Structure formats: structure tokens, C-alpha cells
Length: 321
Image 1 (cartoon, rainbow, N blue to C red):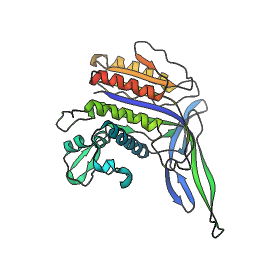
Image 2: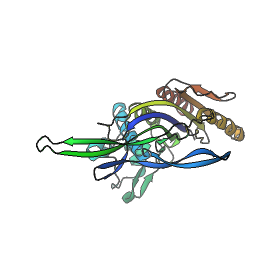
Image 3: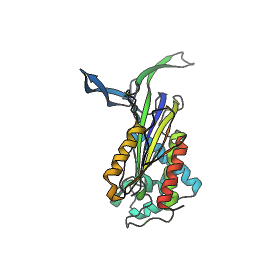
Image 4: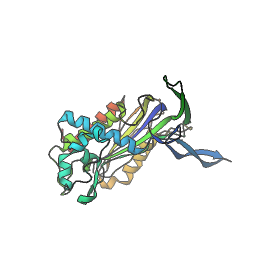
């Protein structure tokens, strides 16, 4: 198994990417509860906080869109339903069609990479790609929810219509996992002919998702001010390894050093199983660097560089290019 995991940090200000409901003239932002580490009487304790968030489903929708647009340029197969996602208002993935599993994988790269469920055909495919929620790093910065007051004015009647929209600002974290071995894999265990091209699209779509900001809604008047602060990726084989959550701690500890230390221990434990873990990271926050020995760790400049390096390592492991 070739497995890729990625942790990202982003500074996002004044965003309304994931609203959940309208209460009269008040539109609420999605919120979740997270834990913050605190000290009480010299002991470690945890404080529960309610913070703004963006759902993994919302992020995955942007990823679907990125795959479609890249697949069209690469001339890879996409079913008509996924191709017309804007007209249909989303990705149903032929959920009511009685199409066999392998026919779906061959005929649509979106269904291959992001999975599907078709009860009437009694077939399903778990997505090889997983997304976390976008949640604040409560350890290193505060997150806020602000209610922004707006007024619509009717020039014919002279009436004013007030309304409020919640916006969030935070240092957000995101986790991504990708089981490379499942991409292009048929129910029989064999692979489609264009498997390597599909792997490239799966990884490049992450770059479009992040750098092109294809996820989230309500951006016509709430386009967020966003900056990618850093991230780390791990390419592991044959046993999966997940990078540490992209947190920065008050004592100087950070996700890059923690991931490196965990990877070293992981390789030591699995040394008799030929485990291999390679790390790629970029950092704009000038975090303390880990002590790197006996481990493949590459530092790059941008998220795009990170994806390109991950793709190079994956290709060398699978496609031999």
C-alpha cells in the first residue's frame, strides 16, 4: 500500500464558507466544539471551546469540482452527471442507475477517486480520499465569530431590510488522507489502463482545491482573505502513516518536529516489515526545525512544490517514471 497523508495550516480572515441555517434575518456560521490544552494548578487540563468550522463535505465538494475540470483537460472519462454538476446542483454519482461497480470506475474518474453509493445496483465504493473538517488551531491562536450587520435598501418603497451574517476568522487546520492503491482499482483487483494519470489528477486536484480556493460557498461578497502558512506530507509504504495535526504549541513544539519524531519511532517499530516513510514540508511561520537523521525529509517552498514532490515519490514507487 502507498499511502499519502497531508496536514495544512491556513490563515483565513472574514469567511462565510459554510453557513448552516437562517434564523429570521440572521444567518449562522457552522460551529464545532474543540479542546484547548490549559494548565490548572500545575496540571494539564482541557477547555471546551465553540469555534467556526468548515465541513469536510464542503471541502470534498470543491475537490470533486477540481477533478472534473482537470479530467476534462486531460481527456479522462467523466460521466455525464458529474460533468454537468453545475446544472444538477451537485454530485449524485448516478445513485439510482443500475451500473456495475467496475463499469462505474472505468467510465468516471470522479466516482473512482471520490467513491459512490448506488443502493438500487447494490454497489458502493469508499472514497480513497478523506478530508477532515477545517477547524481552528486553538493552541496557537484565538478564533472568532463575528456578526456582520447589513441593510438592503428598496429604492421604490424606501424600506430598509436589515440582516446579519456570521463570519469566522482563525488559523485553520486541515487533514487529508489518500490511499493511492485504491485509485483505479477494480473489484476484481486489477487496475484501469490509465491508473497513473488518475493518480496524478487525484494529487493535482488537491493543489487546485487549495491554491484555487475551489471549496466553500458565499464567496461573492465574503471572499476570504486567505494565506497558506505551512504543511507537511507523508508518503508511506506498505503500512499507512498519518502526519501529526498541524498545530503549533506555546512551548515551541510544532507539527513538523512532532511528525518527524513520530515517523522515526514508527520506522523503528516496523523495521522488520520493510516500512518506508518519506516526509515533505513547507513552512512560512519559521517554526523550529526538527533534528533530521536517518529519515528522508525534504523542505520545499510552497504547497504546489509539496504536491509535485509527493507525486514524484509516488510515481517512483508505483509508475516508475
